[in-house]
Image 1 (cartoon, helix red, strand yellow):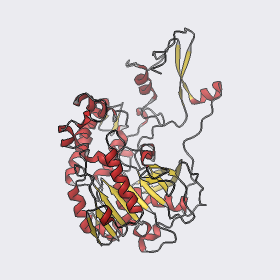
Image 2 (tube, helix red, strand yellow):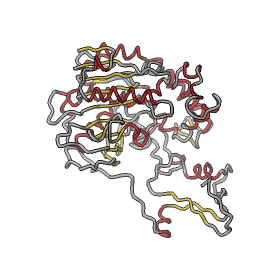
Image 3 (cartoon, helix red, strand yellow):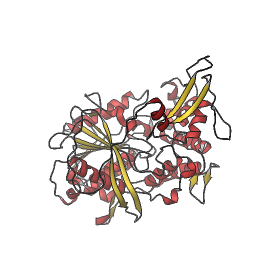
Image 4 (tube, one colour):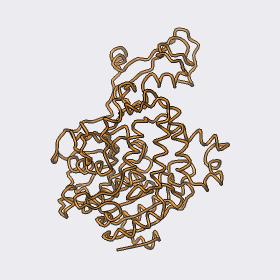
Length: 466
């Protein structure tokens, strides 16, 4: 809209709010942001570059008056357990919803009407032997991960060969979350005291149900050595997605043929918890935070900017800033210019979801509750061909953590450690930005070698244990 200009006095423009649009903020905030209106009172007639009358209009009125028809981004999935009829998928991506009913979590609390939203890229073969599970990372949704996935060898996950299932983790704003973003205002948020705080373990349990009910895999029974179907070709994860990948491979070892852990860990270290605690504290210092109700009464712009600034310091390495590499990648003229752009990426995120995901991250430790086994010792349950790819300069999950994990992968068919050589720190594992071509190529080549079952001692270097 900012680029449109008209002097026609009778021109009328309409701002449409479509049903099920996943707005990141309440409608009033969106109107103010896009129309430059900073008044305290509700926006009645937003003024922008379009001359004449401009009015917001809801989706129902648009359908009635203008004849618009909207296609839903969701496709409901029947509630219940047990195997459903195997769904058919096209070669292009499809987004669906898996409804799990009320779920009792590992902490004893109930997640009501639990729902996982997932995207399927490509088609499963007759035996499901080409399925790849790809859980999302912190703050990411299925929309953010498409750059890795597509037809052809130029993609890390080639849909000409594999069917990739991207599952949105709980609390990311798409699957069940404190704030689903369907246009509700903050006044309708009941507070985080009502959020049951599912763990990484809980996420993986629901992912296993999804794979069984939707694709007909025998996942849950595989933990005791009995499978009735082909194992997953690969479980691939970055950051918090890597935590889920680790947990899945440990909990269901016979259901996973290969495991790729990119910039992740089997537990949240004390040092990493300091970082997470600083993010929580910064966000809650915003004036909109209501401690007694554990919710925000408005969009906490100051808190989110502080959040993003802390992230900028931890997410990239000291060497990246010392060499002023931000000037080499993009049109950034100064450090402040780069930081402003970096921080802007956080200002539209929902703060309730951020706090909920941070709590999941903070409390993560690889878990095998039935065996009373937690943390690094639980890695002994992993039997898959395993590839660990930390970044050489990652402050969240340093290479030294991966070296310790490698020692505990004693049951893995093979386990390799191959650090990503980069100054991009934790961001090296998510190489979709300008200047990250080398990291993208590195990860792609190593994953392709893993999927080809090549002798990775020759192709990857690093360590190999049996």
